[in-house]
Image (cartoon, rainbow, N blue to C red; front, top):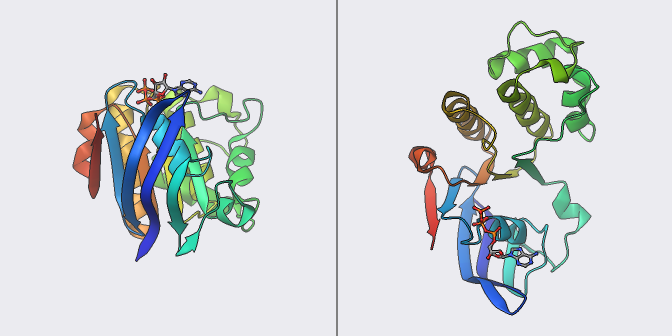
Length: 207
Ligand SMILES: Nc1ncnc2c1ncn2[C@@H]1O[C@H](COP(=O)(O)OP(=O)(O)OP(=O)(O)O)[C@@H](O)[C@H]1O
């Protein structure tokens, strides 16, 4: 099923065409990876097709509904974001950080949260523990959970492994991929790391 349809999108910044007639079909089970050298427009593209940034022309459809040039609430509830800087609430507990994501959805029991933590290899941490006591990789997994519990239909991720070492980076992308396959969430991820292409159902290299 087509989740997101991007047709001939153009983005011009300061008279420079950064995105030139870009088209993409994202199905509900797609794991799209966008690579490209620095400055090729990866972040700009992600921001435009996710509605964070206004496009100059072209069409974007989400679930067959044409999305206006400005992001709308109806669309916002369907999409989630993961960034390099995960912006957790440093002085709050693991539980509180995860539940921020569940706010618009349902209340999760401690047992459900513990099961989620196990699913991202964080067995043994306490729900009352401050997130600041976790390592960078562990914090990034909490950020991933926070996004997952929103159950958005499509996740846009911009260099989500940027702060992680190689082992943690690959493990995070695997988690994202497993989750997207199990629950049929689409993912569109921007990365400079060609190692992740192995996980892609669609790969786009910007030049
Ligand atoms: N707000 C802005 N004002 C001016 N130029 C911009 C702006 N945003 C992006 N650009 C330009 O658009 C081009 C693409 O930038 P973008 O950040 O999308 O590339 P990128 O592929 O994500 O790069 P990197 O891998 O280094 O993060 C660059 O030349 C950048 O200077």
